[in-house]
Image (cartoon, rainbow, N blue to C red; front, top):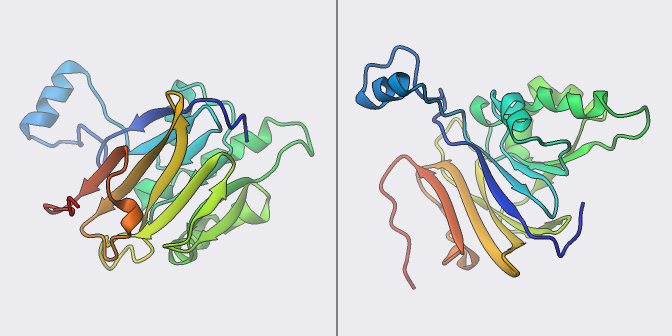
Length: 216
């Protein structure tokens, strides 16, 4: 999965909402302004690039997002929850197997909670059967190692239609030092605020309600 001493870059592949921006036929000022300027924000996805290519979430725009960023391979994928805008692009990852010589491709380790996989499996279980993905179930509150990254999944409350929702705390290296990145994706609350989640170097979060985190 790459050189552990190599620095990591954080690439925002998309920062749009579940339906993208501007939203179709939306009359709000933001969408009107974006249309006038020819701007577009695709569905949210992140890429940690350098030590290894670690993709966080895989929505419907992922093919264009990876192509625009010149991504030639993925070393692992993290899925936060079972809403379509965060996983529906998984089938596009089949291309990484198709372009490799026979026998040269190894399934992409893909991490998510058991509840999330129980939903995604109904549609994309064949990707595991065909050796495109290697599903690895995470346990909230338990650290795991993914190549050069040390990762802690933690429960997030995203409502009754995404009961498997998790965020990820990721330890990596950037700018000659080790840094901690916390990513929550969509959520309304963090039920169990693990001590390791306080004071990350970088916080990337989306919430539906005002959230106050402890300061000490």
